[in-house]
Length: 381
Image (cartoon, rainbow, N blue to C red; front, side):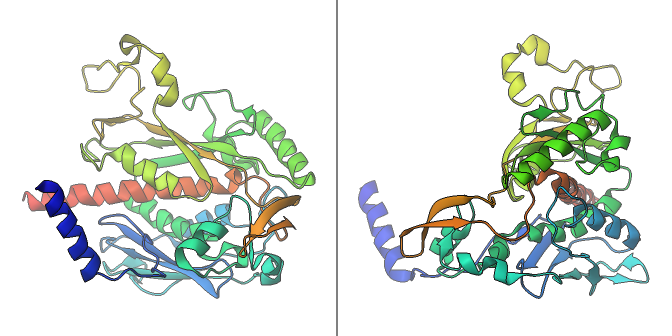
């Protein structure tokens, strides 16, 4: 009887709804209350976004927004892509006389240094480990210039929104740094690194000596026409207790989603992470002090999906950039095997420029929970 009912429902559904051959793109918005929707392609006229849910009366430090954009922008050192984009942000709405009005904050970032001809050779060719193949199969049509919508250039919009989210969060301090490049690793826990070193070196790692080794290694890889991956550790301090929900919307789950939405991210490790699997419960338990703080912090500042007031920390893994300046075999739109080689301006290692992106996505996730907490207090009033 149950099988018959399910079959009848399926036939009704199939006859009632028409399958869309070439679907529209969903998933352009992040957040529940404090939300960011982005638009634009890598080689279009501009990219941009709309920040919805930002409360009125927030004084916006535009210099701080600009400073965050300078950290992410291309062409900032010899170990990143040499595309020259100023990444100047033009705000269109939602800010008046230096303060947010509570209405949607619209902004655009012009694309001024496109070199679309660098991509004409892949118009009908699928680059290995890029979104070319899957994008084409899903939508039936793609912007091949720099990856179009799937390009990491979209993350500039996240940095704009993240800069405003950081200002909303006020005393919460979010700091990310490069923890490894290939096999080179910063062998210090996050509690012992020097945050003041991060912006003093082009790799953005938290140790001067390690930075020199990483920079030299990235330059070697670049000369070979190859790329290398790495990891970024993020530490969030002064987090209030009570952010996050205990079931599907756990704080660390949303942070994981935020990080895994960043281009090239292949892994997310929270708190003790995989190392915690090698410990006993008697070693791993975070024992309470009388004031509610904990003697250790293997939980990573989150217990039961809710922040406990301790530092939140996690590590994000980035794969090597897929475009390499070496010959590779691939296939084209006809399914034929063809030989190709990457062209254009690309990062030999993405992690130095990804540091502000990781911070921004962390800020967006926290700002959303901060707003949810404040709304729930109003509901209970």
